[in-house]
Image (tube, rainbow, N blue to C red; front, side, top):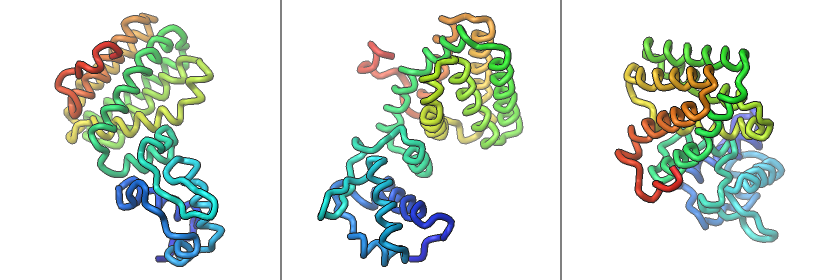
Length: 243
C-alpha cells in the first residue's frame, strides 16, 4: 500500500487512527511490528516510528519497550485532542459518546454564555451577529455547510467574548468538540433549523443586553433542544442534579 507523499508520517498516523476509531483494530490488539508496518505502507521505519509515537501521545495506542504496540480502549483516548475529534466526526458516533459529549457541553457552555454576557464588547457582538447571519443564510438557502460554519463561528465568538484566557486556550479543543456535536444533532434538512437560529438570536440579545442569567438559561435551552433531536426525549433522571 503506497501512502500519499504529502506528509508520510502523518498519513500513516491518520490511516492507523481511522482504523482504530472505526473498530477495525480492536482494543488490546497488538499492532504489527515496525518492519511489517513499514512494508505495508511502503515507508521507512522512521516514519512508522514517528506515527506510532503520535498515536501514543493521543492515547490511541500504548508503546512498551521490546513489545509490540497495543490498541487502547476509548477510555484512554485523548478525546479533547483536535485530531481525535476530527477522526471521530468522519463516521457514525455511538449514542453513548454523543450523550456524554452533550453532558460536557451542558456543564461548560451555559456558564460560557453567562461570562460572555458580562464581558462582551462591541467587537464581540459584531462577531456574534455576523455568525448569526451565516446561520440564517445557511438555513434559508438550505446550505448545510454554511449553517454549520455559522453555528461553529457563533460558539467560537462566545468563547472569545468571555475574555477569559483559560477558556480561550481551550477554544480549539472545545470548538472541535462542538463541531462533532453539531454533526450529530443537526437536522438532515437544514431548512428545518429556523427554530435553532431563533434560539441563538435570543442568546445574542441576552448577551447584548448583559442579561447574565437569561444568557445562561438560553444556552441550556439551545443545548437541551439539540439533544432532544437525537439523544433524549426527556432529560435522563441520572443527570437531573447536574443539568
